[in-house]
Length: 74
Image 1 (cartoon, rainbow, N blue to C red):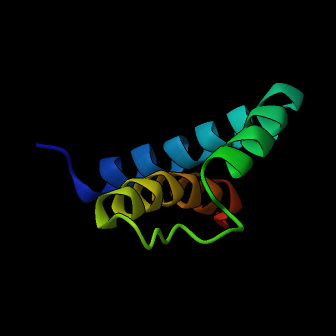
Image 2 (image 1 turned 180 degrees about the vertical axis):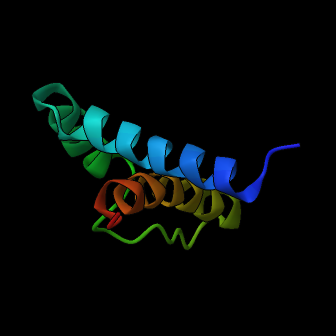
């Protein structure tokens, strides 16, 4: 079983990994593409289908998680 200290170190390393990946030139381009594909700045609501809304919101949620990880203060 991992101790709290080990878990905290793993989380800090994971945050740094996200930053390293997405702060590179290649990562920045991928992040820009994901921003467009994952409905970052547009509504995910679909008046025709609640399933479609949920699907799009799931994509958006993953993108928001990535953004949160690369913007975390250490």
